[in-house]
Structures are given as structure tokens and as C-alpha cells.
Image (cartoon, rainbow, N blue to C red; front, side):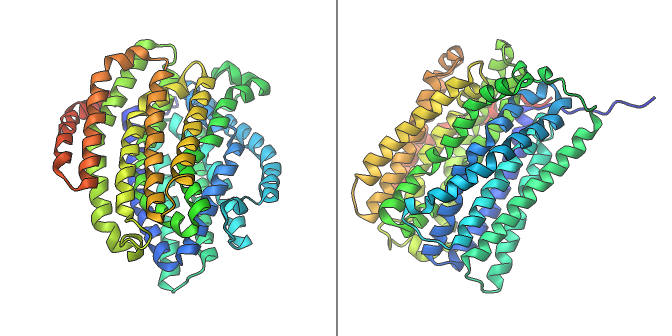
Length: 485
């Protein structure tokens, strides 16, 4: 008699631990990689590389079609359908890729940002965007199979290959922006292929069937599938601009050198965003599986919010200490000595407020993604984008023209956009009972976060008023234990 293989199930606490831990290690590696880039390349060339990769990553996200997100939402219900779903997703994505690539190059989007990088750099940046999109489906599949640990390994391999390549070029004295972008592409391709290999191995134990309704009724027909995935596709096409729009506006008004300074300030902030991203990634399959089960859903939401509260003070203080003390030693002095009107540390400290808003929005943000009405989530992201555009237009493009003021106003616009996202996630949530029950905790967390950021920016004792946040540590640890199963 053949023993039935043990099947893992998704767990928000366990999977968030794997993904968050791996992402934090990847962030350290990425930070080291950016140090190498900033020291090896001219500020203008560094700005080219950053903007080209960000731009094509944003443009090509529509090729994703929202299908990996739909798989993450529905896949835990029927793990035997994950492999067929993967190939189905790739077929749809390949069908859209070619015309979208041609459209992107005909539009020549680099001209929109007033930059003129080599054509080889643009081609490599486009391939990097495509490799990242190809990795989303197998990583979503691993997550719904309860194998977030393997997803984490694939991310670490991607980052390790990239940083080792940068280090090799740097040790050889290379200053070619094209060579460093080739290395970035090698890392992205390695991460995708490793994730794909892991998924194919883990799904080999399941029978090959095509009962699409086991995932959800929308998987039964191509039309229903595309209609159900469309909200996530639109959202994914919009979301990168919400994060990067201030950088694009700084580049458009101040040039690629100012964009490079803002990018250096954003590095640790973007690194910190892996924490809410990991929590969302782990929570989505769990909420998708418990959709329609109010008690189970609210239990997971409460546990997720407790984890966010517990992580908040460590992220605020830890992030500031890392950037204030280590970044000036690692990056060229011009990014911190006021050459461009302001220190990157000051920009980052203001961005910390936006990070706290983003972290605290995690439960309600993810609940909208997993809810019964996915178009509500699309409306939510569109409103956030509109808010980001209005704030960026007012504060960056039509604000003060001095470089230092432009950079600080860009950071302020980013943080205010994140605050608007938090408020909108409350207003549009389908879980008002949950929000009302925890409103006092949210209020305390927001007030303490404001005190910490103000104190750190002004170098005054206001940050001491944020210390009550550490009281959430105990219930955060208890929440992690409650989700392990």
C-alpha cells in the first residue's frame, strides 16, 4: 500500500515568516548591490538604469493579466489544479506579450522622462520586466501549496546571482551600465527558472485533471476567467505608478541625477515595503480559502493586524538607524552632504511615515483583494493613483523649484498618498465590524508613528512618545503562534 504524501497547507503566520525573512535578507543583498552600482556608475548612468528598469517593469505589468493573483486567491482550494493553471496562465500571457512589447518600443517611453540611455539598456530593462512577470505564476503556485519556503529560496537565489555578478564587475573595475544591467537580467532569469522547477517538482504528486470549477466557477470559461482576473490586471498595471510616480516626477522636473538621489533615499523604504508585501502574500490565500466564513476571516484579519502593530516600532527605529549610520558610509558623499540640496537620510525619514501607513493598511488592503467584489479593489487602487497624481503634481511639479525642496516634497507626497491608501482601505472595506473593533489600536499606532517620525526628523525627544508601540510586541507574537498550523 502506497502512503499518501503529506500535503502542506497555506498558513499566514508561517508563510509570512518565510517570505518576510527571505525578503529582508534579499533586501540586505540588494542594498549591497545598490552600493556597488552607486560607486561604480556615474550618477547620470545610475539614474538611467534605475529609471529604465522601473519604467519597463511598470509598463509590462499588464501582461501579467492578474492571473497569478487569481491563482493565489483560489489555488488553495484545489492544489491538484495548480500545474494546469500555470500552463494556462502562460498561454494567455504569451499571447499578449508580443503586441505589448511592440507597443512599448514604438512609444519610446524613455523620452517621457527626458533621458537618453543606450538602446541596449532599454532592451535589457524590458527583458528584466518580462522575466519578473514570468516568475509571478510559479511563485503564487508555491505559496498556495504551502511552500512559501521554496518561493523564498527562489527570491534569494535571484538576489544572490545579481549581487555576485555586480561584485565581480566592480572588482574588475567595470563602469559599463549595460554590463551591470546584463547581470540584473541573469539574476531575474535565475529566480524565475528556479521557482518554475520547484513548482513542477511539487505538483508532480497530483493527478493531471482539468476540473477547473474546483478552483472557482470563473475558471470554467476563458471569458469568465478574464473578467474575474481583469480587476487584478488593471490594479497591477496601476500599482507600480503609485509607488514610483514621485520618482518619475522628480526625473521629469529635475533630471536623472535628482532621481538617483531620491532612489537612494527610497532604497531602504522600498526594502521595508517587503514586510507588508510578505504579509499580504501570505494572507491572500488564507482569506481566499475562508471567503464567506466570517469568523475564520476575522480571526485571520485580527492576527494579521496584531503582527503589523508588533512590527511597526522595529521597522521605524531599525530602518532609521540603518540608513542614518550605515548608508553615508556606503554611498558616495554627494548623496548625503547637501550637494543636491538635502540629505538622502532626511528624505528617507519622511518616507518612513508612508511606510507605517502602508504596513497598517495590510489587513484591509488584502481583504479587498480577496473579497467577493474584486472590482471594488480596482476602484480602490484607481482612487489611490488619482490621489498620488494630484499630490505629485501639486507638490513636486508645481511646488518649489529648488532641488532639495523638490526632493522633500516628493517624499511628503509619497507619504500622504500612503495615508490616503490607508483611509480608503477602511472606507471601502467589506469588514467594517473588524475596523470598528480595532479603531483604538489603529489610532494609537498612527499617533505613535507620527511622534517617532517627527522626533527623528527634528532630532528632538518627540520620538519618546512613540515608545508605547512596543506594548504590541507580546500580542504580535501570540498572533504568529495562533496562525501556525
